[in-house]
Image (cartoon, rainbow, N blue to C red; front, side, top):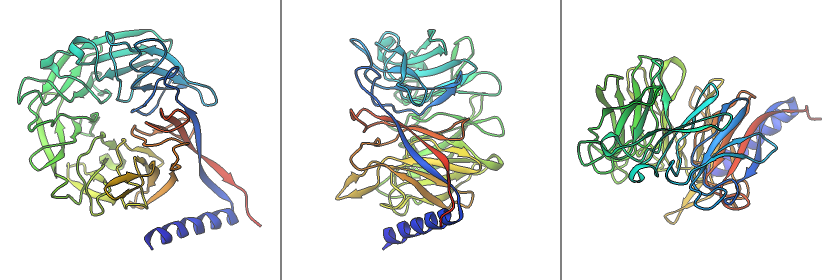
Length: 395
């Protein structure tokens, strides 16, 4: 009955909008990745730089030994590979790129020294440079991209390495010249390393998440100053115990109105499909929305995007059936009053893309852009967008 009511309400709203005229968000499948030419499995979303879109694929690419790519993309054309990783210069990029003027900064999860990953930069003309190769004590295998603080330095996280507790990850700082220092390496618990990126809070500190462990076993939200002072803000319960606020957050937090932050947790919640949560200016967590199985989609994994006061996000799947995930996910939007609506459910056959995992991009052209990690012509992932189109008045 819940599904029937939801879709009936959506159909009625569309009918009323058409009768009165107005706008609606239209979904477009823009491109299907080819593993042999473009690479495959984009785990990060797109960014804008130099008037075009940029992104990465975590595997594949042209030539022998390809282990992921940096590409630029103009809608209506195929991506242009600007750099292919082959191990010595890095491999398996997973986090979003960071655009600073006409230079893009990124991390690689593996490759370089002892397969521990590192940091690189690439100009919009394609000039590539390795900025830093991680040593064990600095942190290893970063899965998140970098952020740039208002102080001019770059900050990031690594899921492994460090000097304490058996190599459970670090928070690090990098100067514009590429000098890396460790801010924090005391994450506790097995595989407790942070997988998501950092975000600058209104007070100048940094906020981040860990996807597992913590005092209650389900991950955490933490705050750290640029001087390295760490504070645990919230510990999620593990999936076995359940947590109404969610658990196991993998994405970073997104700034929203009033200096607060918003995030997603792919598991737990009242309906076990994950949640959208908010973090107040003071660091207190509250539930914004509980994802409903087969209605909203489940397993939100990518960082949220803010556009005109509305939060946009994705879910990786649609439902759970006999302990298996079902469907290819959704694109949703949530209003200031925490009312959530699904703008697109990906076709179950995967033709439009499947399992979006990266952050959405609120682009300068007014559209919302994203990637999927699977699906498309070669089941290697896709690029998609939602843009607002006019609805002519009905009869």
